[in-house]
Amino acid sequence: MGRERESERYSRQILVPGWNQEKLKRATALIVGLGGLGSASALYLAGAGIGRLRLCDCDKVERSDLNRQVLYEESSIGSFKVEEAGRRLAALNPLVELEKLNVFLDSHTVGELVKGCQVILDGLDNLESRFILNQESFKKRIPYIYGAVHGWLGYAGFFHPPQTGCLACLMQPGLSQPEPVPVFGTVPGMIGLVQATEAIKWIQGIAPSLLGRLLIYDGLHLTFDLVNVDKNPACPLCSKK
Ligand SMILES: [Zn+2]
Image (cartoon, rainbow, N blue to C red; front, side):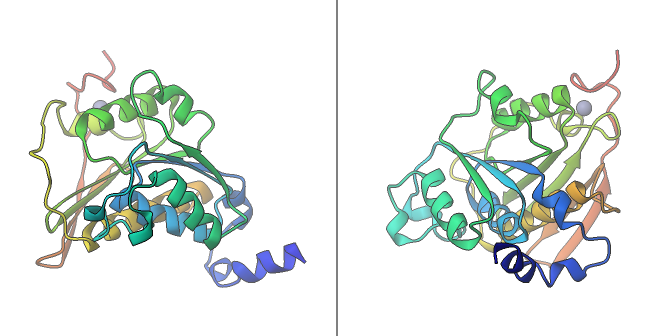
């Protein structure tokens, strides 16, 4: 019975050429940050039937999150995001194993967080944490899917050195943004879905991908630009010296 329900659940996506549900079922994805980006990517990774989702966030839901963080509702306010996200995702797809980590990402915790996962989705909102995650992904050779938003603009990138450059090739640490950052809710939704798409393709070995490139989405002018992210020979992290 369970098996039948499972094939019924995924019956539309397995029609997609090249689709490999078994590979997806065996995979673990880490989502760090369950905000606007992580909400969108988590819902679609769970819906697609990824085997295990490791969710990491130590914040509680605030009312100002609800314009974009679609995992939550009014009644979620004041509760931990991992708990609310876990409830919502389990209700969506009980076949997905959920690991809820109410953990602050830093250089001490990052090693455990990424352990055993096949892909990392960055749903963070600050560059310091992104650099810690980028560094760990480089060290452990786990591909890193970057996402960021500002106002009408959204960015998605896919780094997997040495095949590509890394986040530190593209930007320097220490660039701090004034808080709070303006965000129109659909923009992190769009970018989170791009991140989920790339994660699902990567796990199944479906090409082409965003590897080594940056997608720039402009929600105001409705443009999608793809630019190459070259390896930076002066990169302090991934450049061989
Ligand atoms: Zn680099």
